Amino acid sequence: MKVNNIEREIPFVLLFLMPWVTYLLLREQLPAVIASHYTVDGGKWVADRYASPLGLMAGLSVAAIVVYVSMSLPVMLKGLRPEMSAGMNQWLYYFKLVIIAFMLVLPTYSLLAAGHKLPDFSDAHIANVSMILLLVILNAFLYLLFSRVNRNMPKPVSEKYYKIIWVGTHIVTSAGPLMVILSSQGIHAERLIPELTLLFIAICGNLLYNVRPNWYMGIRTPWTLRNEEVWRKTHHVGGVWCFAAGIAGFIVCIFAPEGMLRFVLSAVVILISVVSIGYSYWLYHKIVTH
Image (cartoon, rainbow, N blue to C red; front, side, top):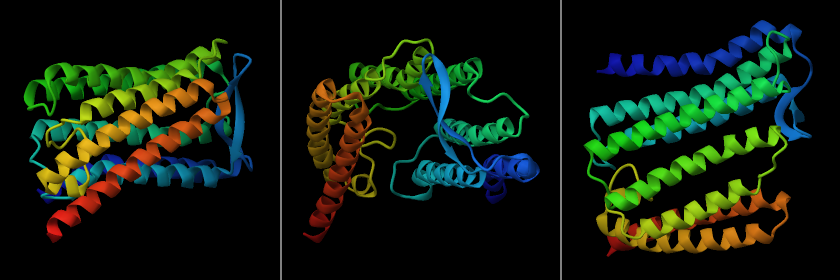
């Protein structure tokens, strides 16, 4: 069992090593700074932020480690979740592998482009192809994940609500890459991304109110997973809060300048997370103490 677990982690080790090996091989050929972020200006991709090669590598590697740990947490916290099927565990493993691969292939590609081994993202065709690949990969995994859950596991909400969440997740996930592709064609619809996301948060808040305990949907903190009463009350409060914050954020986005939209979305997500996590912690200790 331990040997199998170690073998399953080998692809992640190789992925984490890939950008660093590339950096070491190209170190003498790299400029002092390389493009770390691109925007669309006049229908063309333009680099608007720069970082040192080492800084870019370190930042994205740390972000990938955080994602890896957070996606591995349900398995690490034994006893805090219902037992998942072997098939579902396998799908989640591959989904995590794809996300980490995408995060670490990007800096590797940036280094190769900066070393003149590959065309950089200022080539609109390369940038658009990367967005299309992201769109296809994310939607393929979402479809396989939701369809597998739909066939093989008891759902925490009714069939109708489950399909609403299923379709809504595809729409919100697709919005970002689609808006980037449209912007490169001179069609600007950046406001739609935060507005669609906030509407989806509000819809999910309405559905969260009566979500039954499960391991893959809802407010899954260590305290909600340990106690059914904490789960139920946290989802009552969290559902109302998600709905109210999502609608309020959507209204603000309608009138706010475009440069403020990402801050509005970030503020709503952070507030919802803090309230939900904090309330579940407080309620669990209140119930356990009494």
